[in-house]
Image 1 (tube, helix red, strand yellow):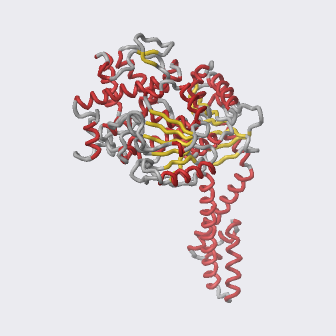
Image 2 (cartoon, rainbow, N blue to C red):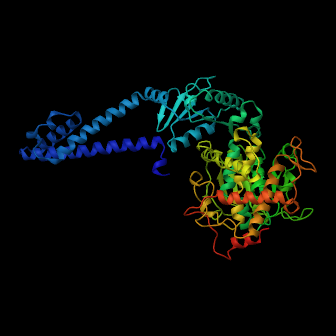
Image 3 (cartoon, rainbow, N blue to C red):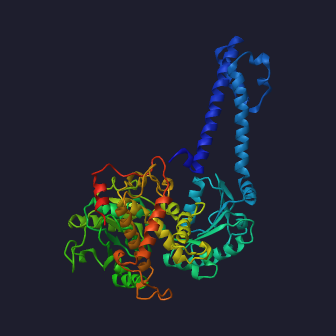
Length: 588
């Protein structure tokens, strides 16, 4: 942790330590000066020391002895000690005053804040976001029932909240820059978020309202509720899934272990497990790999598979999925109807209970040693940490080693709600579609959440496209999550594609990604387009598309080329004839 990221409690301890050190230096200087002065007056040894100690103690009372030139003589030690003693005294008084009146001072500062971040709620993610806001030194108010009086630490002020109070008035929501609702109860989160939307409309600014919803389906469907279209909805499990998939992309792990396609193993198929499956289906496309595969182990296998496929009936068109109750049922490496299962390149333990999750991860490792077709790291979700968290990328990962992921700090960063505009990249995609297609795509504010999510998915697939083109993602992935630039910058003068053949391959990959996105949302192929029934005519291989549709995909790739910034230290391709170059050339 850098000095700039030290929490307020550490900064306070540092200040107290500095104050004590300052006082100690003052005492040493004063004692030294008075001892020499007493010696000059021919005092005896004991008398000399007694006088020096007594006169030293008076340095903190601004005594007249330190203004008497006859007493002080020309001792520079006493001149310095005089000023340092006054500083120590005033510092002590100020510290005591702040401690005594902290509640009143915090409440006063809170009442004067403008353009601040307001966090309302007692969900774990609310405290994690408040912590991140403090680290970033964002002026923040957190309304929580966990404090009995106003508390001020750094840029964060925690205010008490009574049961039934939505906290919007006390938190001065109408003057906030962003409002984040993260209640422990999902229904209360929705209710208070909609209240916040109505309240900020009457304020002097246009505060953005974000709401945390544990259920990812609710987060994506909130736009169906009146006023929900004005919300930025996020869920902890969505943030966790995207964070781990971006830090350690499965498509890079598959190439490292020589797998013909991405194959991940998920233990526990609740919200997080399902988010991981969706992310793989969308972002594991590229690198010349085959159709991705997901193997799920869940004690309620039949139920979770039925519910998942009911929500995503077209999922099997974009990703192979098998669900079992026990790991022993899976016959890794045994051919299926058409091909052998590809090597498992990563395993994810997504059980809610940390102790159970850790036990399952250890058991999985022991079982994996007995199965040659299980390779790759074993990621275990532990919200409070406890396992090694390697830097991003794949170079530092070891096969069958246990790694932790999904901590609350990671979730808060990956949620993007503390950014000035978390949807800025997706909005850039949306605006470009109007220029590319020659039609009006409508205002972002009027889009359904489904279409907003689709625009976000265009952006999330950029790393896979760059890797397919031969760019080395490792330096970029190795950066801390909060410092990793987005979108990924390229090195100055770098072209995205080197010839028309690469440009066409990227257009085909973009079309494949678009089909996965549509199918994940339930769209089907049909002879005639029907938006209400989610039937589309273009859900066909790239080579079978009309030239007008191919041209659109080409233009999307051209837009991506112009969208990615060029700057020193940006991504570049390794020297020719490397493995990455070969993968890029053979893709297609």
